Amino acid sequence: MAKKKGKQDQGHVDAPAPSAGARQQAEAGPPPKMKRKEYEREMRVLHGELVAMQEWVKSSGAKICLVFEGRDTAGKGGTIKRITERVSPRVFRVIALPAPTEREKSQMYIQRYLPHFPAAGEVVIFDRSWYNRAGVEPVMGFCTPAETERFLQLVPGVEKAMADDGILVLKYWLEVGPGEQTRRLESRIHDPRKIWKLSDMDLKSYSRWYDYSRARDAMFAATDTAWAPWYIAHTDDKRRGRLNIIHHLLSQVPYKPLDHRDITLPKRARAGGYVEPDLPLRYIPEPF
Image (cartoon, rainbow, N blue to C red; front, side):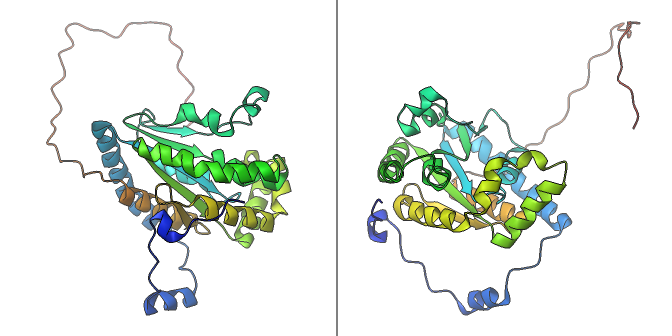
């Protein structure tokens, strides 16, 4: 296993001791689940900021790479959907690669991800990533311990090369508790709208909670660096988790707010004799 670098070597600083207020909040337990009205109000503000960030990325030629990893059911897909639903897919690209082909299995492990790295003016979001080699694959027996160890040794150097080329690399780990994970999996079993999310792999993974915990810890120890840090988000409350992640993402990007523009719609041109044609068009039924 790759030896963890000291915090000083990575450019980190020791976190300050928790304040009395923070200790009291921890002892009091998590806040109540956020109500939808409050959630949507806050999300509307953040969506506006994401649009401002998008315009800055386009104008500045910035390159941003977001990696989303985490436990099954932790909410990666939902978070990515809320990040991207109000911005342009030409700027925000979501990458969710399928299982590797036989040819890809013979390549350098990270090779199939390289063509998807961001160019100037792009934000690329990886819905799971090369970190499969550090989590799913070793836990489920798809790679050897030696292959995982070699990956953990090499990937900080790859991410350093990304950062040196001007790519802002942000890695998010979404963490959900065992009880909440059970509830969400059971919901997928019984809800026909969610059953597609439940795979055989999810069922096999469910019993290996602590194997995943060990793999996660080893991954953090080897790959949490100053140039490509891991950020952990608790998502037992999906709404709070999504808001917190988007708020943090915005805090890491040096964008500027959009200038307000006074825009007036121009007048439409006159019909100039245009008449709707009498064509045998097919209109859809309107049951609603």
